[in-house]
Amino acid sequence: MVLRTKVKVLLMLTPLMENEKSRSEKYWPAPGQSFTFPNLVTTKSHPDLVITGMEAKFHQGFMITKLRLTFLDKNEKMRFRDLIHLYYDSWPDNKAIAI
Image (cartoon, rainbow, N blue to C red):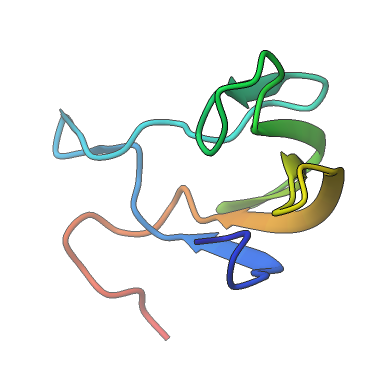
């Protein structure tokens, strides 16, 4: 969906843990690390999608991460797209944020 709709920014408001229960997995890689997803579209030996952490900046209550998506397009050519991931780790459990 991120590739198809050409998303440029992802926003995550769900904490990884809430009320001592796991609510989400950390699905983005740290800077210098990559997650590889083979054979999503094709059955070739190379991966269809690689997500690489490019950089991360930590601020009070949130983190901004630059991710690079490397993928096969419909013509099976390798392409890349950068996107920004915003993660609010201090969003209150089961509450709306105070404005």
